[in-house]
Length: 366
Image (cartoon, rainbow, N blue to C red; front, side, top):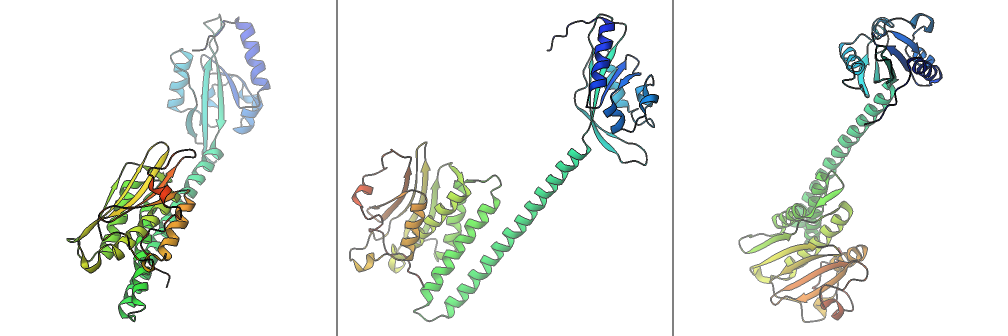
């Protein structure tokens, strides 16, 4: 609480009058009966008050009586009695046919020795333009959000239409072309799933558990014909990351899952694919593990394709390392990122000097 030094009545009046006279802000000096002792020139200009006719009049009679508002009366009365202080009270000043103004009122009681003569300093700020600017800004933000939502819906619909066209074309295409069209369809479906989830993210951050769960559900629905024999699941911790990073993580996971679905379970073999993610203070790890036939033995089958190039490029973009291990059964591919100076999660990275050379062939470009 501020400490007020008592002032003599005469000195207090002189000081208050000097303050009001020199103020560039709209300022009033009132007595205990709320009669106007003095008003700054800026107050008179701002609210169309004639200075010569204002002095000595009741404050609530100024203008056409627009200042006589019950809430304002109560606030000034409480301030004069020392029970409260009016601090940044906002109200609409309705002035008949003239434009309604939004104002902010603050009042302080002067503390001096003559307790019988109450003096109030009242400041009145016209904040109409500021509030209109805030409303305009809020309206623009809402309009932008609506337009962005509409754009996202259009993008999602377009992706679905293109995916349907690709699927129909694949079914009618020659045998040599059909696998490439199916690959393009599957990639587009997963991109659509990523876009749909990111569109729901509002604060620029993405919760990875629902993100990967939805992504795996979308891939499974479009690529797994018999879910009783082949399953795809996600085991994700409670990590949160930016939208940009989540897109790269989602695309990497999609390529690795497609790779496993194409090569790990030949002849309608039963199995399971697990997408995992975990992080701590200085590293994160994205993994895709299957329990299929394992890594290919012949060099011809190890020729890198488009999927390999995509994974390599995305991992490089994330400053991450690709680790491939024989899961016995199946294959475990881990994308690891650790802060500068940290050690890798496993020794397998050191054993693979050429990055993804052990990765099974991924789909090649059309």
